[in-house]
Image (cartoon, rainbow, N blue to C red; front, side, top):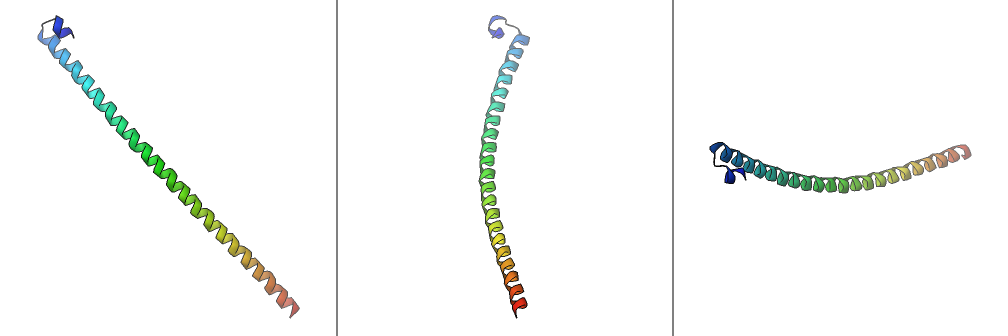
Length: 85
């Protein structure tokens, strides 16, 4: 660095500041990597939850559809019985 060539207190101080800046940059990059990994894990969990919710909703709609069909058959049968009897 410049402090090796120039022996001035200001140059040494500037050299220390540059090293500190690179250390801080490395820490920020490591933190961002950790955050990116955690975000990816959360996205995967959300995808899993979305799939489970979709399966539950599909099952619920299917059961509701069967109940509606059963009710409509009962109504048709009841109407026929009331018109026959």
